[in-house]
Image (cartoon, rainbow, N blue to C red; front, side, top):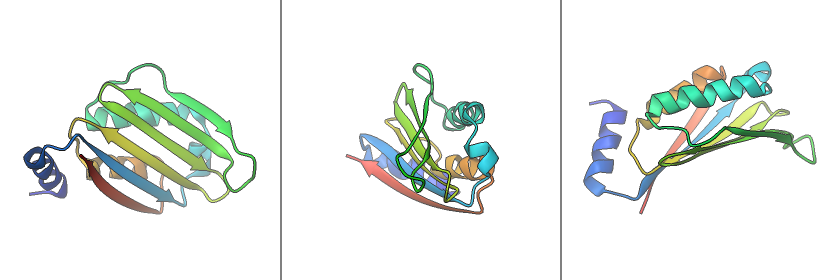
Length: 130
């Protein structure tokens, strides 16, 4: 059984309110992570991977008062909750949160994120919400 299958099996047996995963990506492709249209394509692809329907448009805002945090922040409502993220240009790091009341394959989702942004490293944390 794969890690995704084991996680989904545990999710179904414990019946939590939802699942959150936190995906931290490091040394990402700066040209991709600073392009709003590519981020929109990323969100659409991620929604396909986790099999959820977007609710409304993807919100992408470029801001930050100092260079350490300057970059895009993204939010996408989904029918089962929310996907959000912050893209820190200076460190080429991306911090994503994926929360859904419907189970989804967390490792496949994280790997999609890593591949899309060409990250050199990735950390994933899975949290069931009760």
